[in-house]
Image 1 (spheres, rainbow, N blue to C red):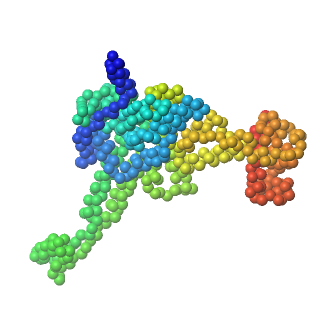
Image 2 (image 1 turned 45 degrees about the vertical axis):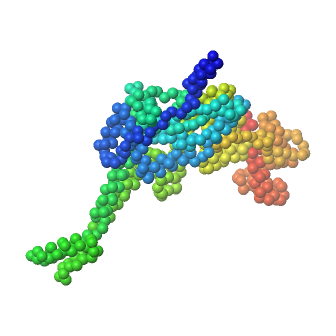
Amino acid sequence: MKNRIAKALARLVRHYIPTRPDRAVSPSSEPGDEVRGASVDSILAILSEAWGGNSTRLFALYRDIMSDAHLQSAVSTRKLAILGDVMRILPFDRGSADDRAASELLENAWADLSGKREALTHLLDSSLYPVSVVRKSFRASRVAGLRFEVAALDPVEYRRIDLSNPDGRLRLFDVSPEGHVLGTSKLPDPRRYIVHRGHLMTSVPDRWGGPMRAAVFWWLFKTQGRAFWARFLERFGAPFIVGKYDRGQEGAQGELAYAFREATRIFGLVIPNDSDVNLVQSNAGSSTDAFERFHKIASGELAKLILGQTMTMDAQTAGLGGQQAAVMENVRGDIRAFDQSALAETLRDQLFRQFCAINGLAGRAPIATWGEDADESGEVATLLKDLKLAGLEPADSALPGIAQRLGFELTRSAAAGGGGGVAALAASGSVRSDRPEVDRVIRAASAPLARAFRGTFAPVGLAVAEASDPADLEERLRALYGGGLDTARLQSLIEEALTAFAANGAASP
């Protein structure tokens, strides 16, 4: 009886918690090369098949055109914008002990997971592909507080994707024990698979081909143009020989023709003294430039499709005022932020929630983040500094959002919220206020800020209020303190005075 119950429970666990990975597709089941002999007609036929639901050749074409150096570099650049950073797992609500515990357990389990880089790389394919799928499996955990942990994340081969369903829903072909793709298919079980769509083409079905469809013809034109360019240079790039003979001397014509044929073998000409031979260079420069320009146009269109801009792939002039690079950097940042957000949402909804559920964790599913690059993090730091100078600071509820942007958790320092350096302006003399605006500070702001305009340092407020410009304020403060202030102390005093004065203005009704 106990054995039957144990077996039934084991079957139940395997059903609801996948502990065995799926069968992998044998390399022999992969379709053949679609690049060789590619033409406009063959690609149109592949797109028509995909629109009808047979996407096998379309995914094979996507696979094969990645051999193009420019296309491969652009796709890698987009992926590395995320994968080049360390992935962090943050609690959904840092103020919740349950959320923090769930986040810590999942982050430790994620750190020990093998194959996660390949899985994330595969999921990011759907930034251009219509969809990408990863299979997940779990195992019994030996970590205290966990029942199961993620055993593996394995990319699902595109050969298994079936888009022939009339309702447009994704299905996966079954695989035989030998690794061969079968003709039957079924809907992917969300307990076993992660399905990611990382693009914005939500108005068309997956069988349309995703954003990558727009790259196919630019790749074809660029590749064909490159082949035509090479053949053109081979034929017209080198000088050719022109021989002259007098009319009526048929024998001389034969001698020259024989000499030209031998020239390619002996690298020289043997001709009579009265023969005239010249080397003529064709005017191939303009045609060569045309091929080169077309090649650059096609490469630029591919870069714009994948990266949203072209300056990452090719050096260009910055333009008037140098604003072009900044604009393109903003576009790149928007794409990177969207890729991060979409991938983080998929991981949270289809993996992290399941992890918390099967382990019975009370906390909510954590959030994946990769942080921002150095320039964007610097902008956040500058903003926080400016807020501090204005006497403002983010509320505790804003810290998780800032932490997600920076890629690491934040906590308040011991000095935060206590007035900081403004307390240095506090006087040891009288604390009685003779000015209504200071009374408002006393009522609405902290005591250190209120003391900033009292007693010995009360004239600072008057100096700030009456100064016409920063230089005038410096002169007033130097005169106020007898000219004994060095530059560093003066700048610190001005910063503290302006902070206190800003807080005083904020307290005004």
